[in-house]
Length: 189
Image (cartoon, rainbow, N blue to C red; front, side, top):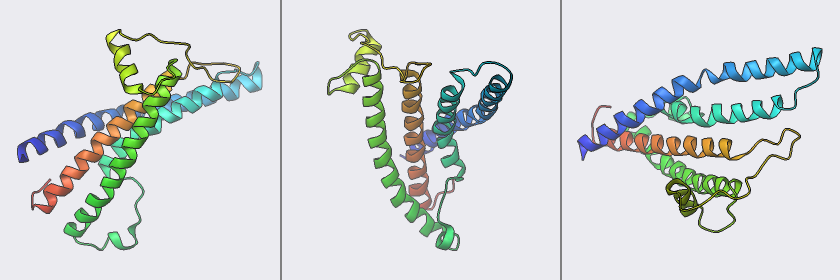
């Protein structure tokens, strides 16, 4: 069990570390889009796509960077009492709070899958089976949802990125849970 836990921690931490290091450069993509928006509004006709694409890039930036933030421990935490606690007490507190976060992320993933299925033209009550059917070819895409803006981009790509980011965040939270359990057992991480 110990070896399996350490293997899981190493694998998930490696994936989220690499993803975080790649995604952190997305801020430059966002800056480029917003720079082009300013230039086009000043000197040319304003672009219709810049604001919405900047919003999509920002969502991808923070949703895919979230697992890396959790891994580094740079997420927001109330440090009024926590900083003075022993490692064991911190591990117990983190273990309890990460269980709430895992539940919350499960609900968020269900909502993201439902929303993505809807954006692909599915109006039924089984979004997971619909997306599995799309992957196997048993289902077909219906009328795809589009944004109501003048640019009218399809919404399923950003919703799919949200599923990926939330899933990686859930896997990272499970890794943090295992780290806390191992710390309580006296293991060094």
